[in-house]
Image 1 (cartoon, rainbow, N blue to C red):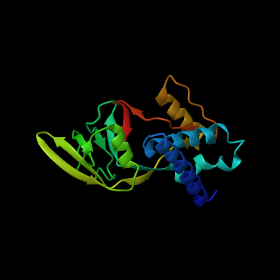
Image 2: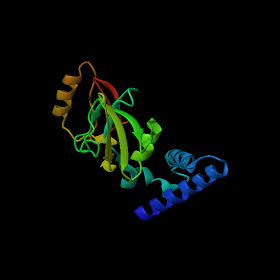
Image 3: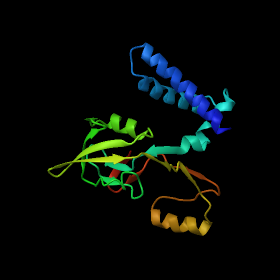
Image 4: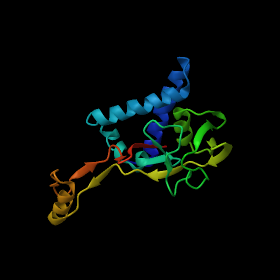
Length: 193
């Protein structure tokens, strides 16, 4: 499926939902967000009815994610927990422990930060670092998002992993797909924006 077709479908659907939202007295952004949810449900559950849309989730356009590279731990927002090393935020001067107070001149909210990160325009973040108020400009970037892993290992490699995971059983079939729906480490669940 061509990238032009996918972008056209996205543009038409998001513009239509944005227009409907505005006619209902709501921000266009709300309609655009709802359109993404509806398109996702449509493609996921009705791919046989709409075969032309079935390839959308596997397309690179849908797998490229715009982000700033800021990690938050659980619900500890607006305190920055960590920064991705080669991310726009990691290169901006922001630091773990900074408390975000404003996004583009507006009071910090998680929704504002998500919205700003999803657009290509530079984002101005005001932070509290100790007793100092600082301002940083971050240019959102794209990254590849790994959505699954495919087992290509040998039986011996599987036995080594199984010993490490003890007592869990690990006997994957050749070509078995492992979905990566979330990320959790020993610190807990992290959110990256």
